[in-house]
Structures are given as structure tokens and as C-alpha cells.
Image (cartoon, rainbow, N blue to C red):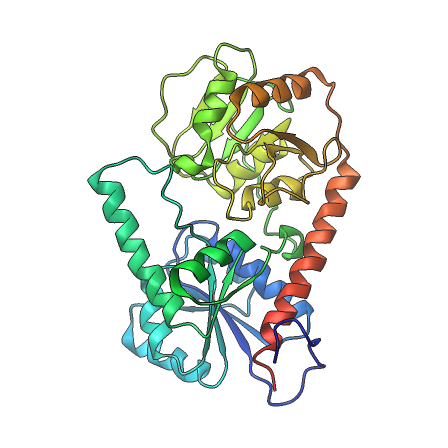
Length: 362
């Protein structure tokens, strides 16, 4: 059946179930898994949710998603038991984790792998540690990609990277918005003591230690200015002025929610844009506009003067000028436009996941 040529039919008795599987302990892989699970359920698929017993937010998930199954991915007995459940069905692995591979290879199921990484090394500094890390994750990604029945990427550039490297076609699936998640997932809010007034600061957050995130561009843009800037995430940053406040380390959900909700806008100065930005999705979920470069990750989602603002990618002067315009109140945005983009994200991601899963339906 050609990809995207038929609509998903009404659920029939005997159709395979889809298990969304995340073996990680920390990180946004949990939200990615839950959003995919919810989007597929809304399209009428029979779905399961399989998570790791050591997931840091297990208590929260068990309260909001009581149907979730938690297993020890390093227990042979539990892995074999889950493999029997998956037999003849669809196993959708939502993000790479070394712990996933015993189940990945034990399951006699159709395997889908959601590829979030990038093979672009242009911004990686030389050094043994970065080389080892790249090689290690390359091995894991190669194992998953080569042994999957279907590889799915968050953006078309990622899908092309898979095709070029492996000669294997990959489908594209937008990360569903956080609005599909059940009530309670974003209720937690923990006040953070900041040197700036709520609603007056710019925020960059996430894996700031990854060079492709472009945090150095942002630091150059705000250097010598009075633009209040909060950086939230683990990273070794160069010296910066008093207008920059760095919260280095792992943030709780409550702290992260507080920082995003109270930001004037979220700044995402990416230098490489092969991945859909979960940071943008979270900002939109809280009705906060975004400043970002004009590139594939943001094209179509940021509308100038409505959901955020663009600057030339890698141009710190252009970023500074845009931030100054936002700080002065000259740059306008619309909360209703942001809400509309969330609805558009949901509609598009649901259509994409319907086409992908329909490939494996009778």
C-alpha cells in the first residue's frame, strides 16, 4: 500500500494494537511518547503505553494515565512477558535508549522507530569525549534503524539523513502538541527566584550544552545589553553579564512550567534545524511567543507578528535587534494565533500518524 494513499478504516476486531514504548528514565521522551499515544488513540487505534519502572515521573503518569504499563527493561522475565504481548502487533519505540534493545529484538512485532537525533556534526567541538559519544549513539541508532520495519523522523531533513545514510525511506511525523495530553500533566508550577520581573525576561531552555542549539549566538546577542535573559539547562557557558541568569542543571517540571509561563518570549537560536522543537511546542502550550531563525523547524509554525518573530539564522545582530523590538513592546503577537497553531499541529500530527499506522492495518 502506498504511503498516505488511504485513510485509516474504522477499527475492526482483530486489528493489531499499537504499543508506544519509552525505556528512558529522564527527559522529554516521556512527553513525546504520551503525545503520540494520545494522537493515535484519537484516531481510533487500539493503543498501549509501555514505560520504564525507573521513569522519574512514574507517580504522575500513574495518576493521570492509570492504564500505563511499567516494566523493568533489564529484567529478562519482564521483557519476555512483554514480548509475548507484542507478538503480532505494532511496537512503536518513541526515542532511543540503550535499555530498549532487549525488548526491541525479542518482540515478534512490526517495529517502528521514531528518530529524533541528527547526523550533522558540523557544530560538535573536536575531542575524544564527543567522538566517543557520537560513535556510541551512532551504533544504537544504526541498530534501531536497520532493524525497524519503518523509521519515522520529526522533520523531512531528518528523513533525508536516514535515506542518505542507510538507503532507507523514512516517514515524517510531526511531534504532536502538548494540548493532546490529559489534564494534570502541566498543572505543577514551582516558583523560581529570579533577578528579573515575571513577564519581562527572555528564556532559552533545554539541552543548552548541544552546540546546534545556538546558545552562543544568544549570549553574543545580549552581551553588553540590558536584555534580561534566563538560560535553563545544563551547560558550561562562557562568562556573561548580570543581565544573564543561568540555571544550570536538571529542572523539575514545576520549575520549567513556571519559567516558560512567566517569560516575555522564548528564544530558540538553533544553528541546525533538522528536528521539530519541543521547546516551541511547550511555549505555544502556555501561550508564549517565540523568537527563532527562519529554518525548517520553525517555518510554517512561527507567523511574524502573530505567534512569534524570525531573525536570520546565526546572525547575533539580527537576534539582538529582534529582542530589543520585543522588549520595547514594538513587536506584537496574538495569543489566539498561538492557540490556533496548536490546533493546526494536532490536526497535522493526527493525520500523519493515521497514515503511518494504516500501513500495518489489515
